[in-house]
Every structure is written in C-alpha cells, then in structure tokens.
Image (tube, rainbow, N blue to C red; front, side):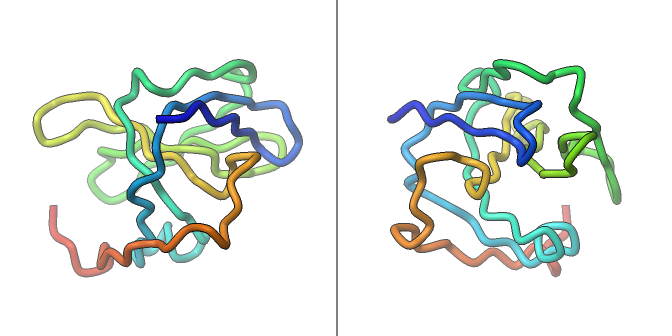
Length: 118
C-alpha cells in the first residue's frame, strides 16, 4: 500500500488515498466512458479529503447507489462513494486525478459496466 495525493484540476479539492493500485478498472458504462475514468476501489476509510469538501458536488443516476463526486468549480471527477454488497462503505478513486501516478505504468482491467445488471 502507498499513500497517493490526488486533486481536482483547479486545486480546490485535494485528498489522500491509501491504495496499492493492484487493480485499475476501465469500465464502459455511460458515465465512465464519457468521463474516461480509470478506477481503483478502496474502503472509504482509506480516503481522506484534505481540503475542499464544501467544493464537491454530487451526481447520481440510475439506481442512485453511487455518489459521483466532482469539483463544483472545475468539474474534475475525483472519486465516487458507495457501498459494497456487504454494506461496507467504499470509494472509487479516479486514478487520473492522482498526482504521481504514471498512467503508462498501468494496465487497466476492462469491465463491461454497460451490460452489468445490479
């Protein structure tokens, strides 16, 4: 596990997340495809918002089970929050918002969210 720093584009929202980036998902559902998300999932307790909690806006759709969080100023989609089927709080971190991650070093795992039923 490593501590990664992440932020939105304008810098109003900043966070830290502890993750090993062992699995990075590239989903083809409507929101992930349109936003170009590369996601890693962590327990919600592994994510700490350092600043800008008040600058985060929330978007939900479909079953409204995932709260897609983004900066209300610049629109950068930083992470999402939801629950595992077990009820455990989880966060979906947009790896593209992590400051020191070289995307060339990541091999995303495709996920067919477009056809998933939940």
